[in-house]
Image 1 (cartoon, rainbow, N blue to C red):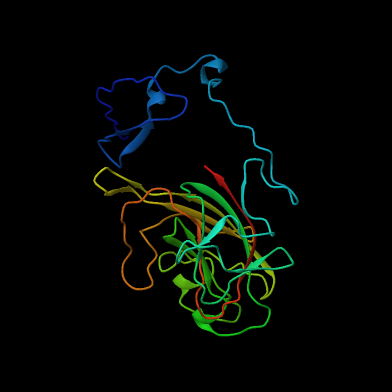
Image 2: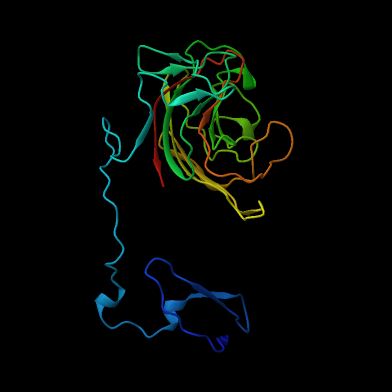
Length: 268
C-alpha cells in the first residue's frame, strides 16, 4: 500500500470566490493535488458551504428575436455608425444592404469598431456569395480579428480545400478547428466567440496568453485554445504589449463579397 506524506501544512481561510490548491508529495507515485478546504475540518452543517455574499448580475436572456439585455449592438442592419475605416479612421466604406446586412467593399480596407474591447462574448453572422468565385484562400475570404490582432478565419471551404490551419473557423495559422460546420455557400453562418485578452506586466512582457472559444453554427470548433500571439500571414506570432483594442473585420482585397449581419458583444 502506498504511503502519502503530507508533512506540515498551514490551513488557510478559503475565499468563496477562489479555491486554492496544494501540491502534495507522494512517497510512491505521482503528485496529488488537494484543495486546501479539504485539509480543514469537515463541515457538519449545509450552511457552512453555502455562499450568500456573491451577487450574480441579472441579464435578460437572448432569444431568437431578442438580444441579451446588456449586449452592445455593433451592427443592427441600418448603418455603420459604430465602425471606422481601419486604414485612415474615416467613415467605414463598406456597403449597407436593404436586407440588413453589410458587404465588404473590395479594396477599401478593413473596418474596425470605434469602441475598444478586452474580454468579450461576441455574436457575428456572415455569408459567402451563393455564386462561387475563386478558389483556395481567394474564395470569400475575410476574418474576425479580436483586438485587431487575433483572427478567426472566415472562408468558403465548401468543396474548396486549403491549408487546415487557415480554413474556415481556424485561429489563423495557429489552431485547426475541431470540425467544419459550414452551411451551404450563400447561406448565413454564425460564430459565437468567448474571448479573454492576454495580460502583460509593466515591462511589456506577456504573463498570460489570450484564450478563445468558438462555436460555428452551434458546433464547438475551438475549445478554450491558447493564442500564441498575433496571427501572422508570414512569420511567427508577435506578443507586443497592448490594452483594449477594436474588433476588426477584414477586406481581403480579392473581391471576397463576404457579408455580415447581427453583430453584438457583451463585455465580460
